[in-house]
Image (cartoon, rainbow, N blue to C red; front, top):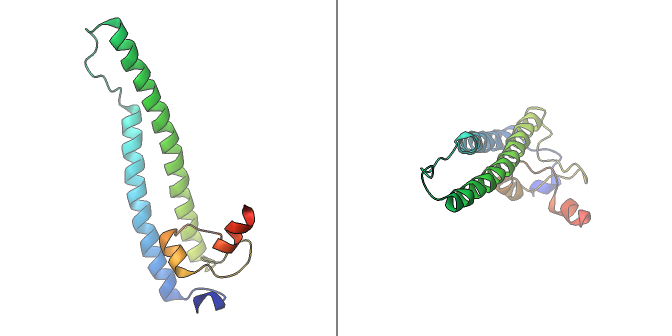
Length: 126
């Protein structure tokens, strides 16, 4: 059983590295799209429409920019967490729970490759 081992072997670490790098590439593309959407002025041609409609449009645009800023912040944290996971792979400390010191099960790491806590440790936080 993997949980009885102290560390993951090089083969497992390489598998995790490929998975994480794929997720980083996708997350960085998604972040770029969010940033482009945030920067875009989203002018929908309301310059010549009624002032009331224009006010609604400007309010929706402000809300959309705020939501994009929140999304961008979350995405930046996700990318940072994934890159930190790559550092742990390089240091051969990847997959070790930072609370219990036990090996995090492989299926959990495949689902959440940037995890630093086992389910046991997560449950202790509640």
